Image (tube, rainbow, N blue to C red; front, side, top):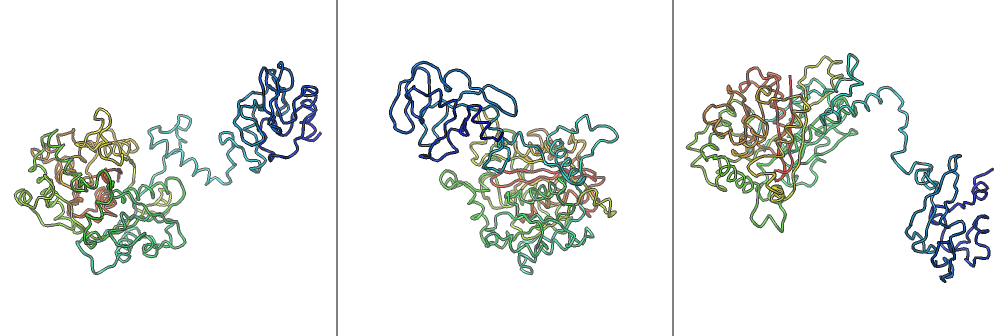
Length: 563
């Protein structure tokens, strides 16, 4: 018996439970024998439906007809329906009016499970995604990649490996290693190289460091912050050839100042998910050559409610400094000590932009920009590039390469409007980098770090102004809230040779090519645990954390790197 005959025998037309969606208005309607018999003598035209104790409008004539009693196929009794070879009880639902020929408020009958059956208009696909079966995967490599994806997600969210997988044969977390690092020298101007050449310079250094060729690279993640600084829209197009990305996977990342660390996180995901084995991350910027970077950067603020205050990247962090002073007692001299420390570190780093040592007195007498931030408290406008090569553990082992490992990745974001970040009952405070702290906590959790003071040997923290380094130190768990100024002043904890050296490269206060500034933080952290930092090497460093901040301190990222 075919489907049509089966439906008619059971008293079910092809439209049952579909609200007449299978027919266009005005077409003749087929009437099943059981329904037609129930209507005989009742005075109900073919377009109507019975409803006990009520009147109903005919779908054809628009007239109303009294419906005595509750008899008939559409009465209160359940309509038997056959589904998948079994008889079930139909469910009654109140439906909307999908077509012009159906009365409003009409009672419809649905066959159980009908919505979960294949739809004829969708080529047999299941309408409910929860009921779709996963297609069989051909090849063990693809199945392994799928397992790696699930495991990465579980580990990053603190769930670890399921007990069923524990033991000698337990599936290990996929590791991603850094095998090549390239940095150009950062200067105010690089008139000797245009933008693509600056990118290529960093890429050449990184590829030489890794011992790989561009032909082996499977994907490129391009780090480019506001391209208005270059005066070219979508400037990543210029970089495709510079990074050897023709006919390869290519994506551009932009999260403001945190772009570099966000790009590395994207590359890490490419490899950890099993999509690629060798990924290049690269970028460059010419902030020092744009003419007026502050005018460009200040466009990130809301033009109606914030920009006219005036609110900008400097005034925003000046307000944060004032709040920190009020809450924890930081002084301008404490801010100056950060500058002196970082300049002393930068003097040991040949790639730093500002390498001249300074003193507290010089910082205090530099030009005021936005109280309490002075000229020496602010980062420079730098031009330069950075590139890094990431690879899977399997690739590194097969080729006998040296590497350091990315063991923790964490990110967090904030609301666009600064005032909204404080929340109800001051859940967030401008004196505390709460979102950065969340990003660091997630990276620590993934890396298995429970006591940062003891387990972190050095840190490269994104601190574009002197006061923001105190926020970052505390967010990274290297000091209690409000205590980092005192610890620097009395104990020298964050200098090279101290308990937890912070920014041994000189940090953002001494080099700031925005598109790659956060990438440089990870690169410098990797060089430290690799033992290749040169004159600014922290003795015995085995584990480091790096961070990045972006936008109006809206996007935050953190990465743990280990030898």
